[in-house]
Length: 366
Image (cartoon, rainbow, N blue to C red; front, side, top):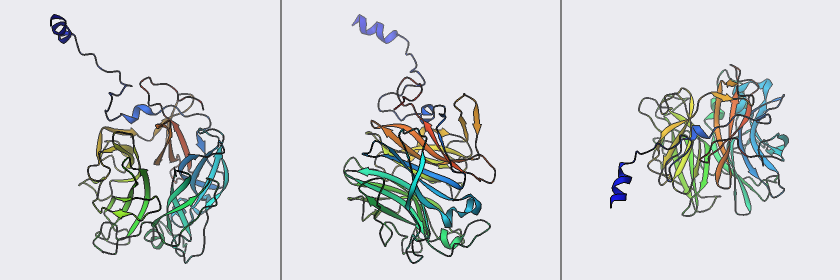
């Protein structure tokens, strides 16, 4: 009894900043490590955007990304993007372009002229490539081609290997809702998919409604959908999430996963509404992935400044489309679309090494 009393008198020591208590929501900003010399994947001819990686049975790493000609300008992503594949012998690169996974096809297909927003998963023996597609006249516009933007739908392609061939489908996997008052009645895009611990898959996607004036529409929210099979059919919940009463477009680009305890998501915080840093990447959590998404206790993942290999700072103009790659079930690399020029020309993908263990340090070499 005396020993217990003395123990109670001992001071409570704070936990080291790099350590997370078991079961606690992590402070993901502490995961980020300096870039490596091979962290940048770019192309002298194409703008590079997005970036989702999976390992193959060939021992290589396959990065699926969006690309379109630099000469067409940044806003041509909505009309001319195509999902391509790059390969590397290391998850940290360097990557080299291999092929176009989802090229353009006839204009009569729902995804005939644009594929974008890749998220790739291996589930069992199959590879599933979720994406946004659209079609239209491909006319250049000062901002966006609204015909293409408002035809954005969500699809999936399936293959036995990251090298393909990829089987595409004639109809979208997730279409807009026919009810004009639905929160996804105008366009759907930015799919993120995770395997549910209780079976099936969960999708979080960006949805645009018709409440606000066209052609932009809005509000821009996020919705969830579930399916027993990665190929669907998906059942929508139609309950907006990642919302903020101060704006009709608070977030985009979710990446979701389950860490064995809870669902987590890294999203682009459009105006610092959740992190206080404008713009930034924010961490959200949910117990069931459907109803209770909320900012993490430490929501900031990153602002627009990264650390170069030599330790110097690198200020960017854009850092978005977050996608994680996992080693042994733990986040090991954060892939993001990035740009460091005001007009976003020459955009690229950046692979940010992560360290999630209690002792911070450089990510191990593969």
